[in-house]
Image (spheres, rainbow, N blue to C red):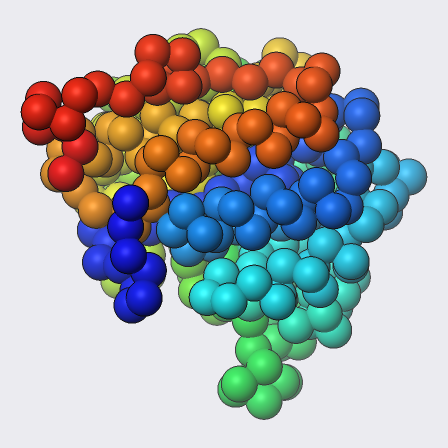
Length: 316
């Protein structure tokens, strides 16, 4: 077990998105106290940032009917960066009022998916992002949340197929110019493979440098971890993932869950990269989710096979 008396050293920054992306299409409501138990346990395992909810109307996604309570409770967890997904300025205002540390704005590079997911043209999403930036900048510096610019369906779309790399670069540049603190490139439907990942991430990173670029992969076609490795090779050092690979998008037919956080942590450890996450304690968090949602699908090679013996040198 790791000692968290002082902040751990990290070579790679991870963000747990299971409480948002992992739960958003699941029909059974996860009790608020169970969500809090998940957040506390994963933070205690060393997870530095958790996207705890999304500020959308409950009639659209009932799983987030307790978004404000979850946010307030999560903000009491020492040392945790509390993030939330926002689709528009109204969601940003809720997050600002609650005092969350980070707002993750999302738009789709695919025009069709953007119209279905946030019900607006892509240019209108960029304009909304500018308004959110102005909203944040009007706050005292100590109250300003970090503002991430997320590009959904950046590597493929269930409706439009492969997305031109030039489109991804264009909207990444527009969000960067509008004041994003971070760009997140997302393969929302698990469409891509490592070659495309390398092409797109290198182009985006060159365009928005020195702004940090994070990766968000889904494992729909089994290439999620391979894609994470490809992004790592490009210099990406921030990744989204979901405990047990839960998740999917309600407006992306056929999309399955995110890459498995447990397996991603194992991949990084096998390469000698420090995440600050205690893998044994992370695996134990799965029991909290299973107890609250016995009907949810949970995945993961490490959870299935177990950790290797320490004398293999895989875990350091």
